[in-house]
Length: 370
Image (tube, rainbow, N blue to C red):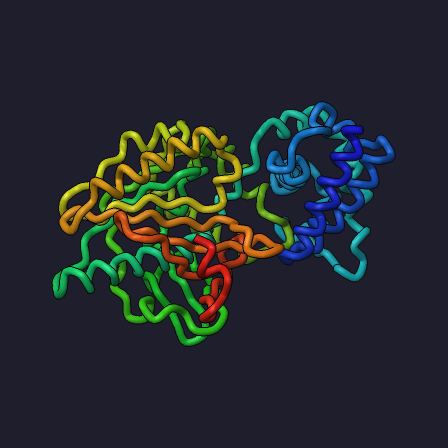
């Protein structure tokens, strides 16, 4: 039955939220799964989406819809339980927010059902931690090949950009114990960037100079609009305040440094990208491949191969990706890099939101996964 599928998807997402440090989201989704099975307001809210596949993330859409109501002041009783709205959540009493959550869904059904037509887009800026790691690695490799001289400026292109916030990555500051990289006055601080020692090439690396930036997304968000900012905030988990702070800083940057995001798919976008003399051309993406149809991704890979073949010492190209990869019995989120037509290198691993990251030990099976 479709409702059984939906219940299973909500339960699965609840466990994922728990593992990723959002007990509030986990508690609400567990109760929402029960409400689906009982034919309650949550079942009415997702009617027509019961058999949606996992990547559609209907559970996250429902969470986002309700969170949008909370942070826009339309659910004051529930706001008392949401840290993102100044409320408080006690993990020792996980069911306390549920009555207000259920009542909000019942009272706002038409609005919530319209919201469920939106794909979830978090534009998690923590993943820029891995982009910067890959960029500095590529620059180190180029310096080793070319010898002394200034590092080339960067032309940065992102697939699945959402609101384009990670196109501003060189403006962010990464910090962990005994380590910092990025502008000291950045409004975006990626704290606890590394678990253990960061890669050697990051220490003392020059800051990046981005001279061109652009991205693509089938349904881009305008971070400078009120509706766009609300959507980005709504899809954050309400009890993860560091993510809220990072997003607020990135939105402030986006207000003065726009990054264009074209409303097209990955393959169509890449057809318009070329390498350029005197600059490092970068194509980057993070946790978006699962949303791209297989045929389109094959076309995108062909374009990436074209860029690699067209690159050379005076016009280098690197493909950077943070994507899940099955290694043994589980998925791991690996940063990979391919400089020009060279082999793909596994540079680091991270949590899905990008923080923290860590280097892989010698003999790790993930190093042989490509």
